[in-house]
Image (cartoon, rainbow, N blue to C red; front, side):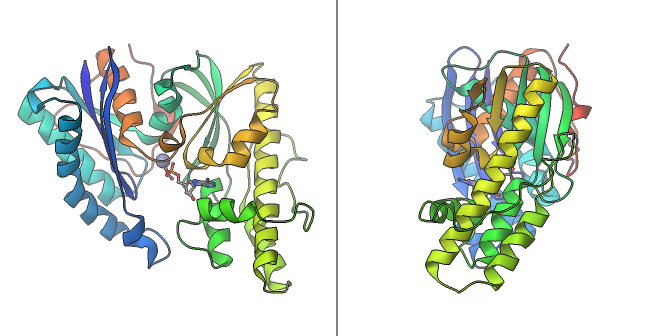
Amino acid sequence: MKVLGIESSCDETGVAVYDTEKGLLADQLYSQIDLHAEYGGVVPELASRDHIRKTTPLIKDVLSQANLTLSDLDGIAYTSGPGLIGALMVGASIGRSLAWGLNIPAIAVHHMEGHLLAPMLESNPPQFPFVALLVSGGHTLLVDVKSIGDYTILGESLDDAVGEAFDKTAKMLGLAYPGGPVLATLAKTGQADAYKFPRPMVNRPGLDFSFSGLKTFALTTWNNSEKTEQVKANIAHAFQEAVVDTLFIKCRRALESVKSKRLVVAGGVGANKRLREKLQQLNADVYFPRLEFCTDNGAMIAYAGATRLQAGEAEGAIIQPRPRWSLEELTVPA
Ligand code: KG4
Ligand code: ZN
């Protein structure tokens, strides 16, 4: 079964074709970073308009990359939420109407299920069950994953998501947008013991997170310090260490709580090198998607959609994008 996947939930247009027999056939991504950079963050209306411009040309590109025509497709998967409503509407409208025109099934994919299943695109995919750490710009979740669609949230952020905390801290330090990867690069030149930042909520029982205090701690430290590039790098380093340590401690606790030895890490912050390195120290097998499939992409949507379409799921001829949508509302394909 050849499935076209369309991702348009935020500031990246991703389109891919996944074949349930041959694997990933083609994958294209257009990032809107340059468009939003001058505003220091995503401008939703500009994002929607740009998805309109880019989705159809990208569909043509992936089909030609895969040596396919529209009539070779067996299904279409599109991100239906969570995300920006206008941006979601674009991928959903194009995906659903194209499926209607081709008379093939369409499936609405949960963006975080896409992230969670992204490691399945690698040559050594994890087996179920596992614990997933999902760390993106909008979410920080620890999930007990029994099978596709059987998700229990073990912990989540009570305020800022990890990626959001990275981005806001970077912005405070005057770093370029998007801040996460820029801050991570700067952290490499920071001195290890210049500052010690707190590890929020690790002394309390439970698996929830809070990152907004850490961001404020970084701001206070910066305001009270000499304004040099080295100090900036030192703060970036201390911030990243605090985040990575906190995630490490909570992952270890989550694995113990469900007696699992398998951890899947996905979402944009999963591309963070220091986090990848640190989580290897867990007494567990740790799985990550390749770097480009940590951040938003069409391949994970094509894969998640193909899995559900293959199990016989499909949507009616309507679209219902959901800006807010909990993973726990998903169900196991019949
Ligand atoms: O999954 P994603 O591409 O989009 C959402 O679904 O939100 O995640 C984007 C987030 C941004 O906050 C970005 O700054 C962060 O992931 N990010 C990183 C790194 N690469 C991306 N944060 C820290 N280190 C990185 N290397
Ligand atoms: Zn994402």
